[in-house]
Image (cartoon, rainbow, N blue to C red):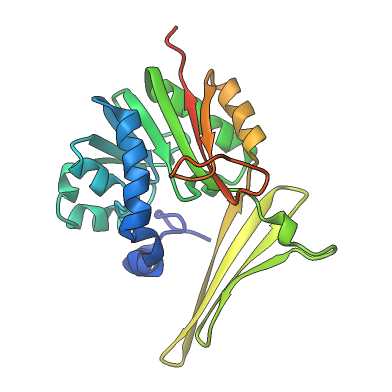
Length: 246
């Protein structure tokens, strides 16, 4: 069961930046922000699942006006407590349906956030919601991993993520529903804690169809923020869809 903050409760939010510290490295953040700032141009940007501001804050420091949507008040409180965070307006709600009273030149979803929508129906709704918030010619950017089902031996459904003396994590796949659950276990001071988060993994071609249903068209797709080519060996993709001018 989850509370009003979804799966990012106060317990998760207070440790989020530390637990995801690799994703906060300048080399990772700056390359993403370079692309997003270029695509925004002189307009404004909306981040889906803005969280603690890993991308929104440095993008804002580039001079881009950024707004956000997030379900977790606990995560947003940490964003607003950081330098410059109080200037970023965040709508609390589900980004598949939440409305923001503005339109944007760029809407973006990073770090697999689109997969927090755990049904095809809600993922399609997200694309339609994005299209309603985009100005003509505006772009929708999604960064998401390619499903790692090739790591599954025949008859197996669990993919280990990492393991140490005090921390373990693994993904459990259900191929029949495209659902996946990530479970994290940690032992600290003799006490064990665990939490699980459900996802719905999604293929690039399926995302393209969702975009088409929302009236968007594929603009570009890369294998990462450095804009290297997306191939059959890519472990993730950064995809850009465009809202037609007419």
